[in-house]
Image 1 (tube, rainbow, N blue to C red):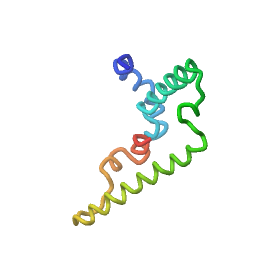
Image 2: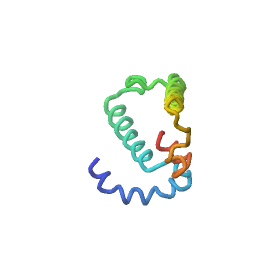
Image 3: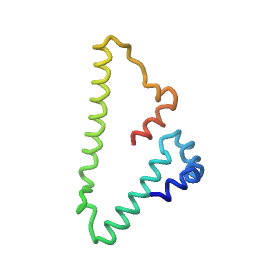
Image 4: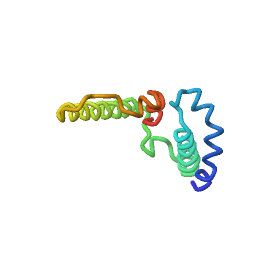
Length: 111
């Protein structure tokens, strides 16, 4: 982890074309954490622990349900936030990050 943080500027420079090509959807944080998950979970836990993905709770059939619950929770949060603004008499507006960074970049941060 320390090595990652010490080399972050170099990693960011190397992965910048991916960030640019995807319009910010795939960012440095996503790629770096994906690498950590593959190495830690895939390489160490599953391989050396002689475990299957199901043994650590990864059930392929449940992935669509998980995505649906996550999306539903996010939508509920947005509706609740909008209702709170309307109740307070405030105007609804796009988040500053959406106008500054764009939809793909914000979505990439969410992912």
